[in-house]
Image (cartoon, rainbow, N blue to C red; front, side):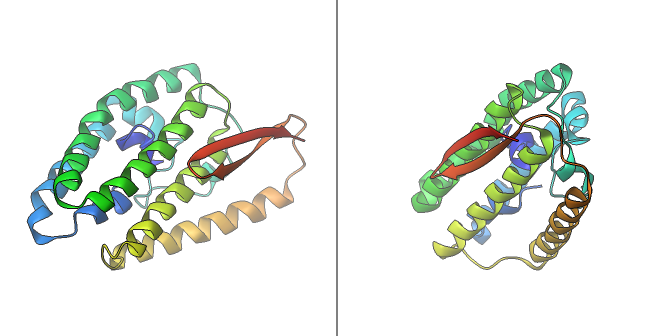
Length: 205
């Protein structure tokens, strides 16, 4: 959920795989470094450490159990996530200012990513989404950004990003297999889909 950690949904939360691709030019090294430092500082706070235990980080520390988490955030975790969201605005501004000056097309794609991240954030902090589903939606959002940037000819995916995606795919598959073997929940679980950048969730049994 790096979108939420970095961007507060950007939790992510939004490691900076997709976001860092915006600044792929050699001249953007300082921007990437500042953005990474800002995100790392957020993660190192007590609030960041509290939510990192349950939200998807995308940095190699995640496990399939995060994708199976059937419970919403606790009130304390929601409060911590709100704190991170407020701090993440600074991280956003670093990348958005650079992109607006040097890559307006990519800036628009990143803005869409932020919009989707904020939609996940809103439903997490309201208690509408179980953490496992929010983590899956966060992964979807990261992938959507990467696909959009690739389509905008922003550059190729780096080797370590490919490795992270493969590891994530394996955990998604593992979580689906585990979920299929578990008894059906007795409480209603939301079914969430994206309509453009709008996150629609309806309770189903």
